[in-house]
Length: 241
Image (cartoon, rainbow, N blue to C red; front, side):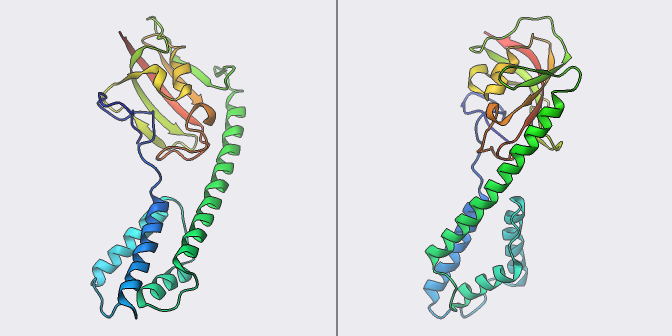
């Protein structure tokens, strides 16, 4: 989930990164820890410091972190690398080389996913823009009116109160206001929101289709992959003066 970067807010919403992707950091930490074990032991660890249940749980934890980011290593070589380090045996790479190889593989994976997401997003927006009721602005923002309100429209400098739900084009929900409305300054959210909410009157409910350049771009954010098209249903409840 993503957070507004303001201390007075009560709940997460679509603003800034909640966190950086921690999977790569986890891999590096595991690598460094294992090399540390090797360095301290000289000829390798002489006894098991975890029982079978704790060892299995450790494997689950590492595997879970890798699976979260869709990293599926060659299991034979992955286990061999761990065994070589823990036992103090000869390794194929030194510590610096291992980290560089991980960095290169991770960067290549992220670039591949980013390019795939960009193309999927382009295809989605092209088709979506052809649907009846969907309006595309000059910036590339797409929206459709679910319910039109009768109240005033906010300016970019206003504080607004909204309910919202955010999804990816595959239907996965990545954020929601839940039961409690969210309040935030309209000029300090992603540009797709700043533009889109100024089209709404209080009492309106719109559906926005936000291209990556008006959202979180090539970096993504938390559960939002790089170059993602974002779909939001937003209900504008009030403008706070």
